[in-house]
Image 1 (spheres, rainbow, N blue to C red):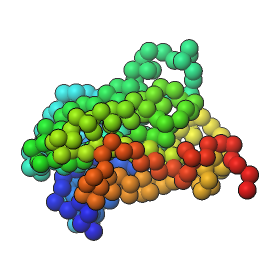
Image 2 (cartoon, rainbow, N blue to C red):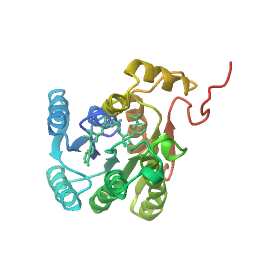
Image 3 (spheres, rainbow, N blue to C red):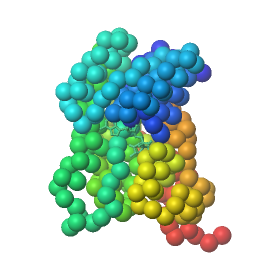
Image 4 (cartoon, rainbow, N blue to C red):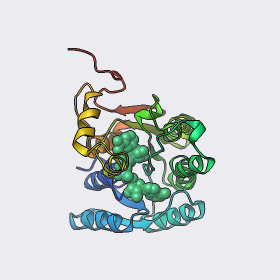
Length: 262
Ligand SMILES: NC(=O)c1ccc[n+]([C@@H]2O[C@H](COP(=O)([O-])OP(=O)(O)OC[C@H]3O[C@@H](n4cnc5c(N)ncnc54)[C@H](O)[C@@H]3O)[C@@H](O)[C@H]2O)c1
């Protein structure tokens, strides 16, 4: 309890998956949480659940790829809470499983506009409020596939660029007492993952089994396991941690497939 007591946070994509787990955990640990998402139904439900459990949370509809919306909503959040210390840049969309010569520029823009430009807009409009609040912590949710390649090149590129943006923003904002770090989840069971399996086919159980074999811990992760990493970076426990990358993947990055024999 109370690991982020008194702080105000914005969690993008807080209506589902890792963002939802993060919003619930930050609220449980004492933060006032603004959930921003395009999924109004789930976003409202998460905020209501948090309030029923005694926490502070509100939902705002926000498409992070729209600069004017980000500017307006972040101003409303700051006006409501009177402070802003934590920004979790979590919202993202999955990529296309195809090589560059089959990818259109519209597909490239669609992914980049949310996964990278969206995080840029959110940082741009959160930073002045964080400075006014005396500093804070930005956590960029990238991916282990921003560190190694995968079969979704545009998505992987967006995450690699988010990692790079983290490093530069950490330098730019250190003097303002704002820390900037990235979290790199491995394969996590979330609505995004379920939707991908539905689209690609292969069955949920089979895919979970297959991805588990890529991981030394022989299982996929759950959203709470990522949320705890984000909580640490958001809290004052990480007061000397900036420009760091926290890989949370059951060891997958350290031991890429094929799985080594016992
Ligand atoms: N699930 C995984 O295996 C995995 C692995 C590595 C990294 N990640 C990253 O973790 C983060 C969360 O992923 P998840 O699996 O929980 O996804 P999810 O789809 O379950 O949740 C993402 C949320 O973002 C919201 N969103 C999408 N586009 C938006 C937009 N334009 N504006 C505002 N909100 C928007 C969605 O409505 C949804 O609520 C993403 O950045 C993702 O790339 C996930």
